[in-house]
Image 1 (tube, rainbow over the protein chains, first blue to last red):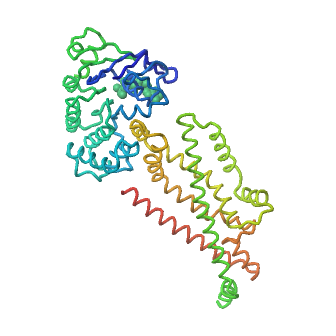
Image 2: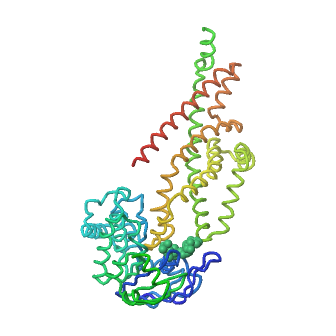
Image 3: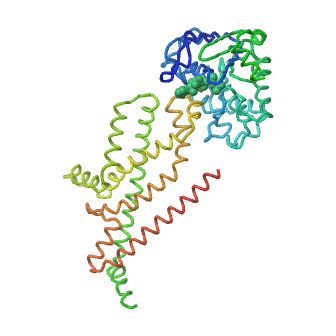
Length: 237
Length: 227
Ligand SMILES: Nc1ncnc2c1ncn2[C@@H]1O[C@H](COP(=O)(O)OP(=O)(O)OP(=O)(O)O)[C@@H](O)[C@H]1O
Ligand SMILES: [Mg+2]
């Protein structure tokens, strides 16, 4: 579904991503781990061109993503941010239906109906016309996930979706993600939550200093002899 | 005491001279309101061109023109701009003076408003644009539905101040013969040979308008920040 080929990204003179290759197949749940500053967020953001790669190719369903077609692919590649980024000027349902209505995925009425279905599912049907500022972090992130789902994405990128949350709210977001996983959603997730990684990942990618050091299953990662992997895992447990 | 009343009578009541003041007030408000609307339109366009350039390096020529415009307008006196527009551009055209005033002060205000708007756009968290973009919304749609509404909310106080500034700045419009508030007091004074009353009265009118506007603005601001 998604293929990243020799992607490089620099910020000024700093090389942040170095020849990254990664393949994500339909139904995969790829978890990216690694130390702070290793380029995990940058890699995710290169996939949907929030940061444009300096070189390399990104294929989505065998088509090369470029400047011209990126808007179309962004509809199919959902993204969930650490800081939620709900639109502050819009209430919950407006947040959810803005893009699908403006981009013609749904008519206004269909979008509303669909949005309310989703809100019921995440137990926030009573928050339809509430503004983001009066939601808890966990509620905000679940609304943000629903906002992405409304675009009928084929894959969703999550950049530390729970690390800005109070501990008691982490679970409600993770449960929603696991539901999506069980429904077969393809996901790429950056996270530090080891127990969650174990439950959700079909493949784990370890990044360090802009490179992918190791790719494998949870067990392979845990049992790795690689020094930086061992150091990282011992630090986050 | 009766002398003071006498002067007051001569300045305002006699010969219906207060009508000058009313006419001046009307024109001052017309010019200020027209100019602030025009200024917001111009300012919005400039700030969008410059934002697009800042983000994507698109529209370099337009961006250059906009920057030049802002530099020139902010670097020269408003009265001079008014004179250039009236004596040079509308030299031989029969044109409504109030319209010239609106145009000149609107063009002037646009440069200042564009800077206010830019600050407003930049004050919106970058995550808002990223979220909009990542959903597939174009730059234009993201700006229109997400960024601009938040930016406007952040800069409403500054825009209100711009309006208050304009009301005072238009007092130089009398120079090209526009009958605005300051000019009207000047006309009355030239009839009565007494400057005190006409000037004090117009000063009080300016003060009243600007104070009421400031007050409304701060009430409005409080409303918004509570919402
Ligand atoms: N827009 C930018 N301009 C300049 N440098 C940047 C920019 N974005 C990221 N960087 C730098 O790139 C490096 C990698 O950042 P990135 O956010 O991808 O790391 P990360 O692995 O996600 O880290 P963390 O776990 O802290 O989120 C960091 O050194 C960061 O300072
Ligand atoms: Mg990061």
